[in-house]
Length: 239
Image (tube, rainbow, N blue to C red; front, side, top):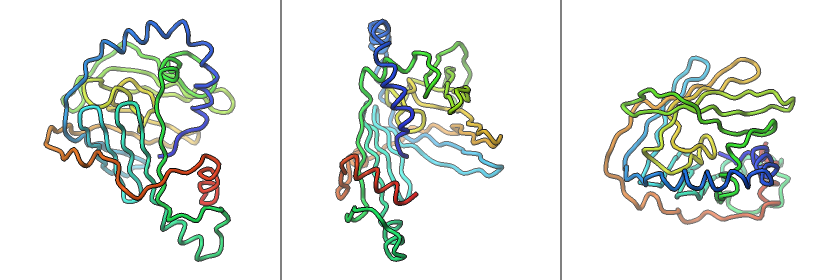
């Protein structure tokens, strides 16, 4: 997971328009009850006829997603993206194609925080970047009552390539910072279709309450934060 710079640009462009919305939105979010759910949410991901499953661990307003090479930890409105690029960097160096000044071990920490000005801008319509539209509609997914929203996302020609999202704000962090940054809840089902017609579908198939070790939701040692210019240079070198 790497932050979408185009999304960030759209947020900044809309900052000056958000003042009229701030009071209303702040009141609405203040009414959301803090949930106490602890357990695992299991997703089925279907792409090109192939299906795989991934799990998201939730501890009240914390969420944790892990793979072999990366893990993303959400604590409230803060996100910690930990990338272990040691194998990739080692391979590039061994083949003498590494052109970045970075000389670390490849364990990189990327930190960010969803600020109130960003939140306030995420429901303001635009024709660049993205925004959320919350609309009427309910259905049940994995035993959970789901609400409906539309994710409006625009390509370089200004065409809306968005899609419907089913979500819940009854479990997990107040905002999704892993899959659909800034959604007011946890996404339960959505499908992304690319320009060539291929699609990737995400759907929650199980929500299971269980005991989790809160130590899992602590930042692991050994990851280092980089200056923005050095971070961009690292990712440019591995593309």
